[in-house]
Length: 184
Length: 184
Image 1 (cartoon, each protein chain N blue to C red):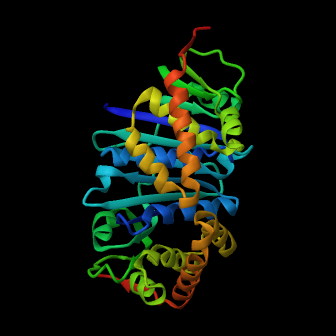
Image 2: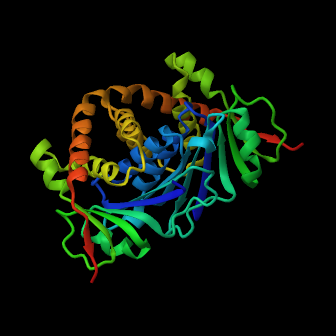
Image 3: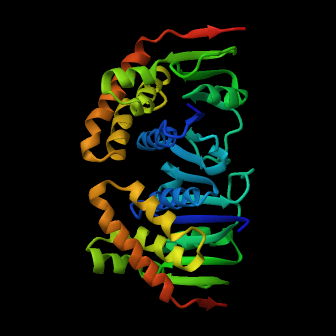
């Protein structure tokens, strides 16, 4: 595995911070070293939010991401702001309901997370968990078992069923998704 | 205010990560910029956990703490490991139930958080929230109102009352605590 650096960005309210926390927990359950960072406040003004997860087999010396291996962008502004920090040949996962313009060299996975969340659960707030499912299916950086445990640990008992359902739908989406190679 | 850097450390299970998340949220509610970082996994092996919060009026350029202004140590090992990173004249808050040896130059506040939690709430897991109350009373880096809102936002509805109670008891402890100047 080596070291994997993931950045998740989107509008405040899209669950970017929670998604990073769940991903970080899951990787720790898999026995990895994890540093997980979130920014709030004026950095997030215009109500953008950012969350970062560094996962490594060995000790993490420098806990800051400069270039990420995986960028998860929940809206257009997240792509516009953070694409410059994606490594060449890195992986871009987007919520395709909220991202329209893409002129990038990257492995792009378009996940219609928001519309799936509305369709299946009547609430777009599950889009972040659907994206985590898709990420798990596509990149296999954490085990399915650890991810389910991390989700269960992150919600109150009466919210677990819907979130596990959203996660599994994300797994399905991620398993069937076609990689889009955009070479402008 | 400028920039304030806080590190919280203790055993896994002492609520160090959650305490950092609540403190970070509260500072954001106060309109500050916040970066909040947590480490899991092997860095936390021997089951130590670490959480960091940087609070600033202006944009936070470098999101890593080298020396902290405030160290919250929930057990002896946390003091032993992290005291070297406390700034000269910095503030040390300890859970005095779990820290016995102190030979340091710092402003030290000894909070009997674990025993208070057991006495008042029959559960030592509230010690982290008691410490947050004490911190708020002593250092006033976040407003009381923002802290209460952050606590309410961080727990399920049926857990809020006890946590707000723990927080208020922490405020009382912090308001009446005597500063211990240890100059070895």
